[in-house]
Length: 111
Image (cartoon, rainbow, N blue to C red; front, side):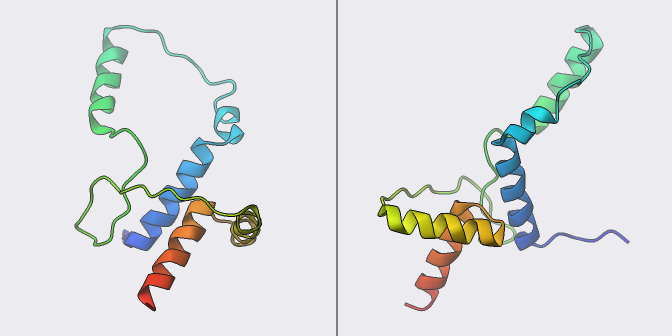
């Protein structure tokens, strides 16, 4: 039986994949990769594949059926807060963005 992923599962996997793609491990994974010859067949295969891929990180889904571009919010924080954020992210094995997003959601939910 196929197990369906919840929006939370998808969010967590998306964060892990994005973090990996931005790390040195991403390039290590392709060491020794074989390059295929560029011929008509491989060009057609790549074009079909590229048509199915959307650029950028996946959108954060608030509701299961609602997807689209996620808004980006930027703000400054004191160095001490950044240090706490980095420690918490490392402790929970999450990105700083995920920890900040969860903290903001929790804060706004209690407002």
